[in-house]
Image (cartoon, rainbow, N blue to C red; front, side, top):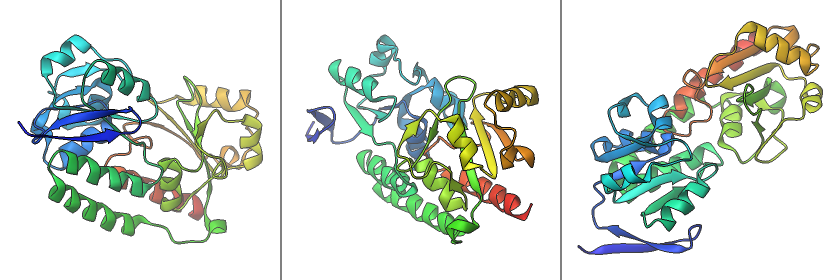
Length: 280
């Protein structure tokens, strides 16, 4: 079979791809959602448990990995033409898959909402679904226009988001698509002048005095847990706490960290919440 090859800089090697990619393993939920959204669901032969947690359509597809660890014996039996992973926490996994002889494509973690749209086109083009990907991008752009807030910076509620507070507290700044998601929906991330993901400085959160605090985790935190966390960190005088604007959500309910096509649904949820904060 005739093959096309290209150099992938991160993995420092050439990837030989069949002319038609028919068997794909996707280990990152947003990529899996892209594939499902462009009509490639039947060609996905393996996913991660993480994908199954977030995407209902892949429940019946075999699991071969967690977010960062793979069952290589099971993976080989699937004989994939291509494996999709993402940068960030899966970079080491990509290196190991490549070392073991698998064809791997490392999709970049988006730095903005437009990075999500680019990923749709890249993934779609790789698997021969360019037209379908283009139609999906057009629909997403139209939805993006509906929910985009055009108000001035000073009109936006200040927002603090903490990911996984019950495991390893993490927040983020610029060049992370979640920051762009918040801004597009009409909010202002209090750490928007910082770059990337990082562990929050709790005193800096107090000085930022957010109007809304969002805690996102795999499970819902109960009221006592949240009150205890806020008290330990000395946050009782923060405006969001005083006015009862502390929002705890599961990732399934508010998939902020998910950079798939359903980001427009998250955008809608956030825009409604920010309007509520401004009105209150």
